Figure 1 (cartoon, rainbow, N blue to C red):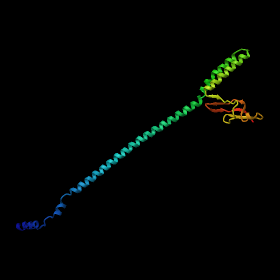
Figure 2 (tube, rainbow, N blue to C red):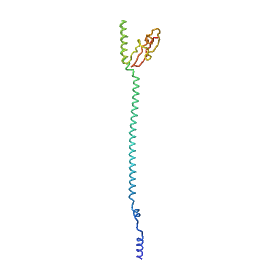
Figure 3 (tube, rainbow, N blue to C red):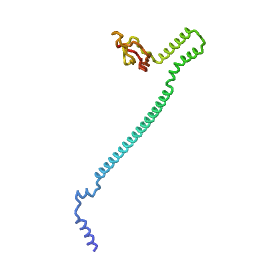
Figure 4 (cartoon, rainbow, N blue to C red):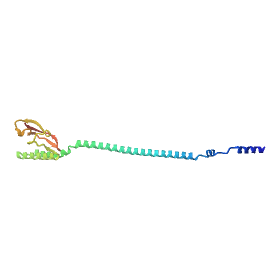
Length: 199
């Protein structure tokens, strides 16, 4: 009985077909597939890391630009406030320089009024001196008298208030009389000269 069992076993073992090369290769673990999968995983991880780096870089750039923007807005806001303040001060105190220039003339007028002199010549001379000083004060501010004597009528500087006929051909279109003096300030007309023009 023992022999039959052993012989059956032998037959089973001996009767089994030998493994082919294909079966051997399929039974062995597939290392090439594992390597490919590993490479694919590593590549995916590298790409993921690169994307994370790019995202972090983009976030940093956004933060820098945001900071720059906020600083620029703050600077502009400060500039606007400062400009408005300067403008307000200029409107309120812009005439200070003009007044400071004219005050010495006012002092001269006060002294002239306080003077008890009865000499008409001295009074006239004093008034002339004050007038000359006032004209010089205006000139320091850029104010100049518009010349009209024997000048051609010019609408940029003159305003005709009268036409004088029969003045002759040489006076035609020329200023023959100045009724009110005109002035310029820094070469800009601040008051036109009122004149009579020959016809």
